[in-house]
Amino acid sequence: HHRRRIVHINITEHPTAAWTAQQIIEAFPNDTAPRWLLRDRDAIYGDAFRRRVAGMGIGAVISSPSSPWQNPYAERLIGSIRRECLDHVIVLGERHLRRTLAAYLTYYHGSRTHLSLEKDAPSPRAVQAIAAGPVVALPEVGGLHHRYERRAA
Image (cartoon, rainbow, N blue to C red; front, top):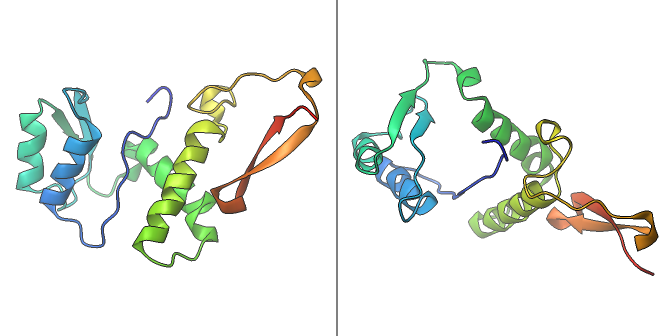
């Protein structure tokens, strides 16, 4: 979590334990699974999910009931997505939500500053010299956010 990278995101209207287990496989292919998985006690983490996680060699750490502060990284990300994106967009359907989230994740990884990363993005950005030209605003997430860069005239 030191670079705050989101490794996988997907949506469904009716999640099941089997669907959630498939998301773990898609998030960590080819033996790239983490050593530990911090999760809550939601019913979505049913028997199929627990078997899949154990089969991948991932140890489960279960947070206490009604304790969202025990998983601050996930809670912070969910809050950021809601406050910075979804609270400002009227979602017109599943395809629209997928496109909006994909655009937000591109912004999150490449442009959004994080105080814990010394005001850098998860994908580090080069410092631009003043001689590179005037500052230009580049719209992201459909114009909801902007990235500012220097561009030659």
